Image (cartoon, rainbow, N blue to C red; front, side, top):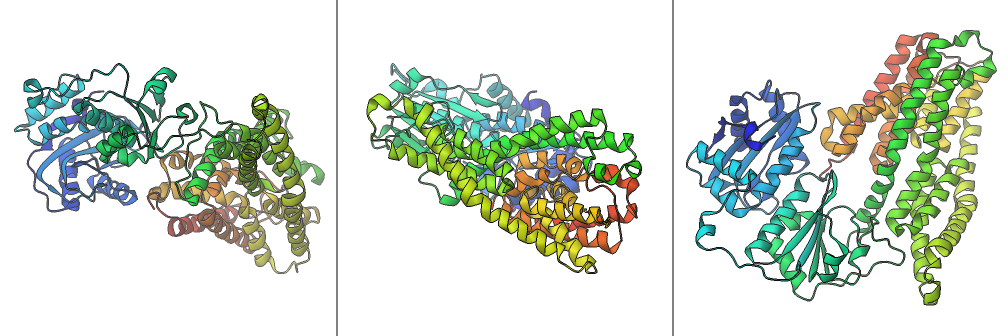
Length: 636
């Protein structure tokens, strides 16, 4: 789809004079409505302002691209406005914005607005093209400039008379890599900015973009060997070992947009720091030198590497287990089963058992993958084996996902220490390090730590919690419900969760059939929060949020783990509060159930089922509200 197919003449305003940022957004939204793209302008503006609250779309160099995916949009479209005198739009570089493109995309669409934004980003970063648009005298001229640029026919007026210096180098002088977490706008804008500034100065350049569709324009080994300098403008990990021994400038992606000339000068100055790959670091790995970043940011990057790789196992396995519950719910009469078989709900029917076993196998990889890829982010490929083993031991010794988190970080730092400790070995043994020494010593070390240091204290806490709960006065129903419900959400499938579950099944076995609802609340609370507090979650988290509805309704608390792992300080207390409320309410409403699991699929067998559902959704609402208050916006 071409840009001009989405930009109508009625949606263009040249020479505008809005008073401020709010006025500019109002005018752009009015233009969008004139183009017939909106069905609810108020809703669309609300969503645009919410997007601005999470981070300004004033991209610098006089450009702003306010945008939103909104239920108020009827059809994807653009509106454009030039403000020759410029206005303060809180841009990244602090300069006034003079050229505006507003983007609208319908909610639930195919992210078309992001594709348009990527295309626009590469076009408007050409300073000559940007100036030509700002100086356009008519809407027809404005649209023709865009068409010419998209067709590769645009030529700046001065270019015909006096072309810039022609590069005569026999090699590509500067190589660059650009990347941002979403891989949509800033990745390509930084690439275009670097290319344009280098071209004007007669400097040859090639830029690799690590966008949402993967790496494009990948740098070759020969190009890297001959290059005079390397620029890494990235906000996420990129493959770095290939640049070993080369002068490399490492910075954030925004600098690629706003400080292109400065980066080019530094890369060619001869004073850029020489990059030295870490021992065992692979050329295709994801490591980069982040030693100049804050410790918190380093931890966040490592954590996200583990969570992003773990998520498919949680989602795929969780939905398969939910299907197993659904099949058993339709095929089995729990009331007719002996009490000792009711705990097998989800695998009683042979067909349900197939789904449950496959889903369970997927869940079995969850913690090893989490720990393994955290360790790999820290120590590159040599850390993977130790991390996997640490995660597997955490799953078997009862320390759960909190233990796996700890194991992942410990494994990564242990392997990094081994790299330094073994650096003095003879060169003849270099090849044995990644295939023998690192995995052997790393696995042994993390195994000892997980078995004798992490496991025992967690088990002790687990045992204490169980004995404390079993010793409580049964008349304190509300307190028991709140405690058990809250415990279900503390580590979401880990030892404390299991302690609460064992306590609940123990009460069931003794004839106390009060149902546990707390385990359903965390995934539901998170799903609702991703819908109502969108600025608190990344784009990937918002996409993954709705799957938690299925998991929550299926009593699969683990669906909340990726969100809790990414932001435990704010997510876990919110989920605990919601689960505690739900647990207390099920006791207050005297809801009973003969099976300790199954979620909504066993509702027909629950005593007082309507109030059971009320308790769950009230708890989810409380958890959602707490997330909205406690969790910081993505930008913060």
